[in-house]
Length: 321
Image (tube, rainbow, N blue to C red):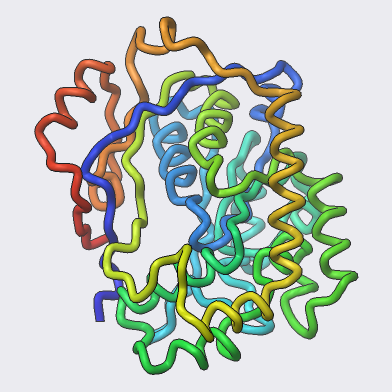
């Protein structure tokens, strides 16, 4: 089993910097809970906050880790599962820290209410069949899943409509996912979230989050890339595609809702900085080996370009600590 094996891009991408409205910038002074849905691209955001927290101290960062179980993927949610949702004792330790706090983890909503935190949620949502196939590929890569077991895994082991359930909250992680669950998820998005964005917008979300804590220029490798795949996420075979489509109908509706809402949010609150100004100064850089070394850098555009010229663009395997 390759339980800690991960892959990351060997190249570093300079993300397009953005400006955000004063209204959004103020949320960086409050608490943010990142509902990190597995296989939606959220590892880059988690790495960014780790760097900002340690570098500037402008935010207290806490990651709610999934308790490891032998032979069970940390990405896998079953009915009734809470992922990394903290115990009351663990939550009290987080509450004891001063705001602003950035709390993240593979877990449902609920921490803000239970902890009496002052702030909002954020999340990324991915096209549901792609997300589920990516999760299957990840679990296969790390030795948690055999190819002959994929259809059973998809049809009965993995929870249905995971994204809808996680956003709706901890009380929706068991039982049937219904129209009421979907309505609660969209209500949450409207009332309790700063933003929810599709995975394809992860670079924009990363720069927006950086702006909340005073970071204008960010460059990053792509983390937690699945390098050993069973299937192409966009073109999975039948009947796997049919199984996942049937079991994630509410997630499909939720994804369409999120795409629309992200467009409204971006038009209202976010503007891109012109390229002529973007190349000045240094970038807070999340290098390919950050998952292993926990270290970041500040590099200029020229230094990043020089770094990329020395690599071949292939994925790098990393044994996470």
